Image (cartoon, rainbow, N blue to C red; front, side, top):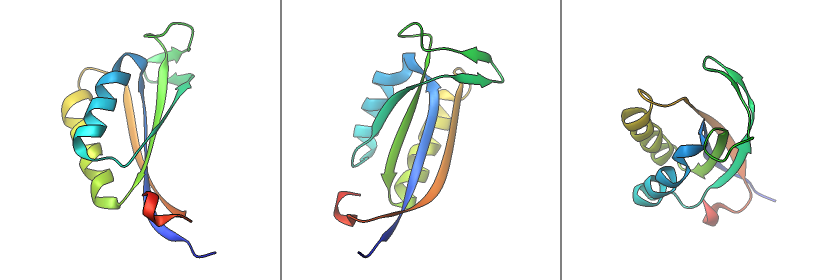
Length: 100
């Protein structure tokens, strides 16, 4: 089966941002996304998923590189200064290119 190159944008951030991120992803044209609870430790200490708004979430978007970069730039501009957030891009291969 043939694969196709796409970019995976991963965002780990405070759960309180979930609805705002969903609105931003919709506005910016993301073809879809996955959101899951996340736990861990980082520069702002240990984060658990014990409270709906105090935990972290992990957001994943598979799309073309340009869109992934645009979304990352938007998140950086609007949220990095005031919220715990990490974004990174990874090259991935997908089987169903029409979905991404």
